[in-house]
Length: 305
Image (cartoon, rainbow, N blue to C red; front, side, top):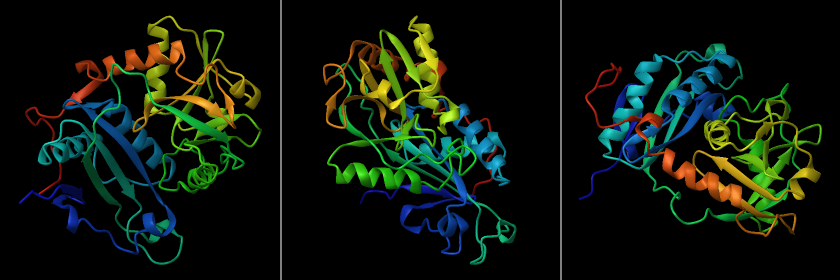
């Protein structure tokens, strides 16, 4: 009989079927919490320190006190992977406000809920070209930076879900959202990159984006490859007239956009800069210096039993 996967939940490692949270948890009732999606490649967790830092920054902005230190949280992630014997995986790390009453006041939630899920996931990166997707420019605007800022990686993804519903109804793969000013922000769960005349551009924080970990590594990769890259405002016109457009995210990795609103982007396939970045990114995710090894001697202390 196949062994059931285990999940870390509030200090214990429990079987998946027993990993449950209260219906009074404010993460469920109000989307009050933060999370990270993380990848493990060949036994190494990609950019784990950056994910942990972003989780704690998101929590700080919500006045949500995480009951573990960063080192302890790191060890929880690694131990969850060890216990599930995973070498290529997707990890979901969640901290919610915890159990409260039916009111919105977070002060009534005594203890945050912390859980870590790890499931096997093979990488789509490799010698072949990236997947080519079709997109629309959504009528749903990305929440502005003075509203529910997407700089916080919160449990509230309704803005993205509404855009995804629109792309589903249009029969395409993805929706690209504009910000409240009309500039390109991001896709439903990925950052957007535009290539024109050999220059790579990506929206800045002013457009209400999440500063993606993969986004940041691609920006650095462009510098390493002597490809000019800019963080700047991008108009819808610049998006649809680009030579290349690609999307990047932890789970999605890198995907080329071949069509937007029914019009071809470049050749409608994978452009040369997208292809080069994809190929080089595939190489770097397995480099030892890019991640934290999972299967090594424990050096950290986690409050788990």
